[in-house]
Length: 226
Image (cartoon, rainbow, N blue to C red; front, side, top):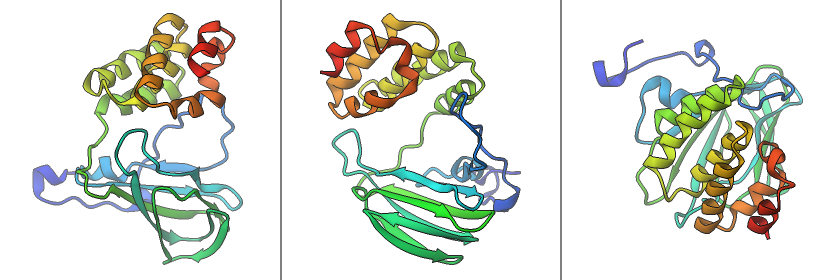
């Protein structure tokens, strides 16, 4: 398919897009799939992706969009393309059949559970007052390698991301996770410590991330997490 850069436009069908790789090694496949619409269509001005899931599965997993830096966080607009879902936003449930639009502010905790098989939701996001910054291609390649269990490649790809974004706390944290998986604890602690220096909220991510289990009993972990 031609990109917008080549022809001035790009077109695709949601139900024909290739699903992104699963990125949780060893995780149970619950049938949920993510589709990288932004990268497929070569969009650079805003974030957009799609999710599909069978009935009973969270098509949008629980999260908020509070940023790990000084920006206000990302606003998100969800469109239920087909099927139906129950959104839960800050404890309030909203029934959303196909065609429904749901706008969520950054600080609100949200998730959406599919009520029908094949429920598909399009998510569009951006940060008010801030230009959109697409993730480097190396980040995508790193997560693809991670999903295949190739942790050494994931590390090498993601260290490029860190070089490009040295003050990005989440980038540092992800690098630490990949390094821990790759059996490189000293480097993992270096990036983990820097991530916490950049933003104390990284400690929240440290608490339950399985990628860090191999270094969790090391005294250096407790020192960083305290």
